Image (cartoon, rainbow, N blue to C red; front, side, top):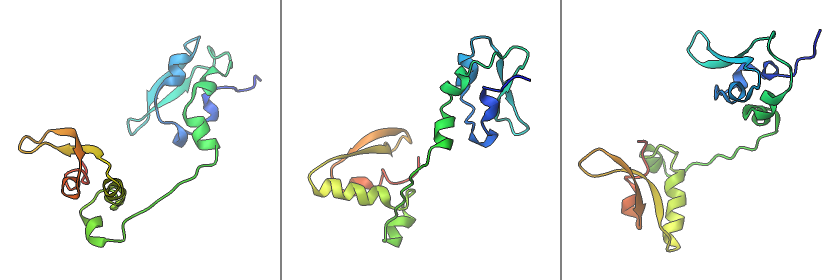
Length: 135
């Protein structure tokens, strides 16, 4: 029995379906197949796989799910602002700090009247309202 050195070592829930493993396989042993929900996952042809490990070295999910992660979370204490925001008010709180120091904030917002989303520059507090909501 041959040692396995390919993406079958990666848990399904860790796979993002990017197809990098299939694209880099020098012998074409990896195909992307949809599961019952339609998400793509690598499927190894054991007859073709040489266990070179290139797919594992290419996989972007592997380091993410094996290395310890640090997560930070924040939200505004202003409940009204949180209700008007899609980020828990974090964007506005940070943007206010930048503007107070004379800076500018760039974000995605709707262009008036046409419903088109563009990157807009906010120089003051009033311009932030258009940037704080989901697009």
